[in-house]
Length: 473
Image (cartoon, rainbow, N blue to C red):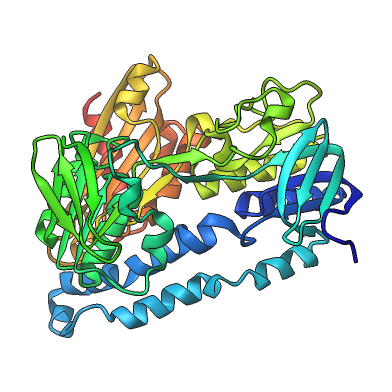
């Protein structure tokens, strides 16, 4: 056994720094191409999505969503006599998060022939990574072909007076808590903020308040999406303050309430404060300065995911760390390409520019892919939109009383293809992939007439949207 401080050396075809879902997939595809690979990870293999984001958050949301669906059906609503079982929900959350034990993920790596090195990895030069293990050993890794950065992102904390000192929650604390606070303040009305606001309200939080500085929830999406979500939140007893900015926060005692002061001088008091205003790249201490890049920045890449500004075509960055599309599925998409590109295949990550699918798993869900109308116009595309209420379909009517929401297509009038789509309504995330395929495949509106939706399903909205487009001429 090496003593602390000892340096050893090993060599692989591919070194991946970061063992989240992106890093795992990079290594997996590299080995499928006959390359040797090692994953360097200082926390849990599986990363943010598995333990502190996607999986636990959806486990917290699902019970409330299921109850809401039953309550919409008059003949079933009477059977819903209680509320969400909080203890059972938290136990399910723990199971979906593997009880924060990455044994299963480690076994997957082993089964794929991928080595795992637990420790903190830093690039020290061309194709070279130094890993400091938990016991102080230093291991120098050399890559024959490539080093891939897949370190992801962390929650950003804005420079608001007293905010850090008030011990706010970020996505990790809000998805792993053992108790539901009576009063939850949420700073940020994006995906994390809206999802957790609704989850905690359904789990029994008596007061939930969202503070969003933009003029609507989900400001990156179509305006109607934020408006419809805000209306649903109002009905659920979630208070939404848009166009509001926090200026100060303070907590008198570690276990006491937290106060958030807004720019109009008003104060909000909660038992916990979730900060959900964005993410920052995990690149502060991975050796970027040794290769001419700036620590703390996202690693800019080309469409082959090669780091810009680094000579030699040996450094790649995949997933959230490159800032292109901060979504697990896009990271996995990039990872698949990187594993093939390093092996010599001529590929490019062009879907990042045209068809990024995204779902906010609230009730109603907000599912979108491609451009919003404004984004398309800003790109110089002559577009028109068609929209319809999902409740105006036979399948929608069968979903129950009050079922509805907006479906909208953004259509390139010159090419007669869809460049963007947004759906708002219960469970609409499952409808999104059809739109993604239409955009990626550049399927013409005329061809889509022959894609017949089954009756009676909510997806019949596709036919109604095509009819609406035809009426416009």
